[in-house]
Image (cartoon, rainbow, N blue to C red; front, side, top):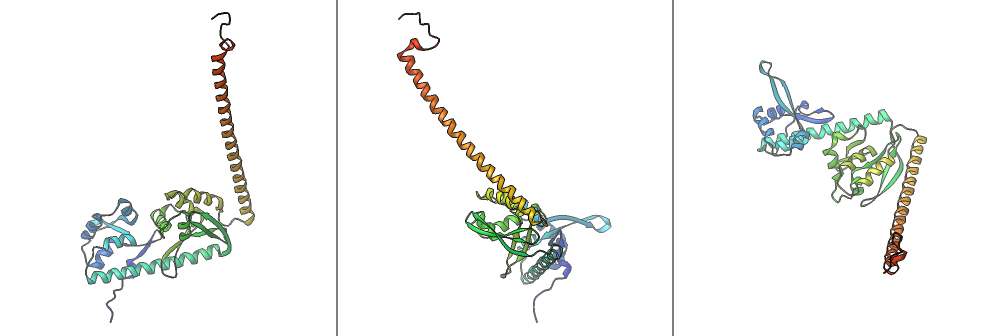
Length: 297
């Protein structure tokens, strides 16, 4: 006989592509008054940004058709809320909830992978692109749909982060800003959450990173962005455009450097002229223009 609790499958559902639960279900599962759960959520000592990202205030028709408020929460929101639920029974239900979230996320990942494969017919090609800045060289890989993918750990390297999962944390923080199809989440062999990003995703990470390497990642995003399903010749045209842009940039930099050298030479020449003018004015004042040479000394 086991003491493990099993949640009803409807306890964790998808909302906007994310596994969620509600304060109503949490109250029912943990045997609490819903008003107490609402009060606990509103009194959480978390940042406003965390609350907005992980708790959505909703309402349903209650007694006498009056709106009854409740909250829909993400996995992170549930975890933060239920930290304060103690006791053996609460611990068993927390474990059951975690398993339910894990199952839903695994099913969602599998579903996304299957849908992507069916819709795009995309497979990795083995064709790599080397990016080398930050803390070293990494390789992004093309797929057959014209997308270039780079993992979150490789992005940590490019952005110069010393702590793992920094790029992944940025993604979770600004998840709503990532264009559709620019990121794919999965779980690795150790059941750790990982993600891969297209250049459109790189651009969002670069925009929010405070690392000095962020502008280089933004430039790489522009250089390697290719809309999905474009033919190879289109990609080659785009790369030629990038090459010409880089060449023109080099030309402008050379012109700017030459202009700087010219300005410095003019300044040096002007200084020599100024010194010569001072010497003439001192030793041969009669030769200076504007002087009345008829005057005698």
